[in-house]
Image (cartoon, rainbow, N blue to C red):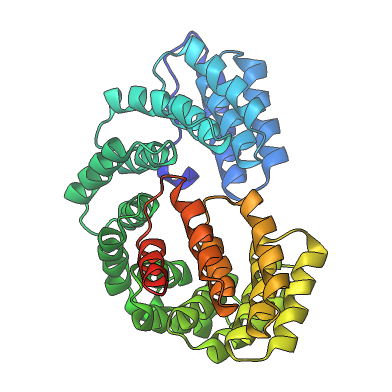
Length: 377
């Protein structure tokens, strides 16, 4: 981030020529040390300037930049603020101060400062992308989208704006639009594409249920980084969507090799085993998940095993208990009704579905099943 800025210009003062030259040399040395990551030595240089001129903007901004690089944001804020108190409108202090508030996740404060910066320099692409990012973080779609597009008008292939637009549209569930921006990123650098672009493309296809296309991108990602969690998860989930539990299981198990206590993945592995008909291993993985902490989907999985094995009362008991925790989960009511139907207790099956409808939630699967059951009376 520091390469985006030049060394700030010192205002004219009543210092003598030797002092001005010494400050200039110390400032150059301080920024070179900062660039090399030698922050303690950079601090010493900038503080030496303050011994010559205690209000010097070189030193105040330099100290802010140094503490910011060390992630000591509160210290950095103090120096930037002091600079602005003495040298109002200093662009370098405004830039650094906004970046500190962004790092502290105080996005609205960062936005206010960047807006102030843009009054002095409204074509600065670095600042424009940062303010668009901040608007995205506070979920202001209109402003974020508008500023990213302004950047693209100035630089049509700006990667920060394209990535930002991809994330923005994805966050607002506009997956087709998100895909367009990620594809532009991919096409610009297909031979050396960043793995995050590949997983983002895969996730868009996963959300759009175009699983075959998702598989292609996740597999490319795994060629770059074979143990990448997001690529393994995305690929497993695509195979799950394609009803290929054997292939999804391979990748769930690979995640568990590195993260054996991930209860979400344990439950997904249990689901894969269950769909493959391996009920013993399915229950084993559901139990592993429950040994970590309560998990609704692991309980559902065990209930479905009981259902498949004909233990309908046990399945119903587990599912009814879950309804108290998740009363709006339509799937629970359908599973309960199917258990009653299997016992030839059609009236109780209908009653189970009626309980869901009393919540005032419309669900086509529940309505269709209810109609089907009523025709059996």
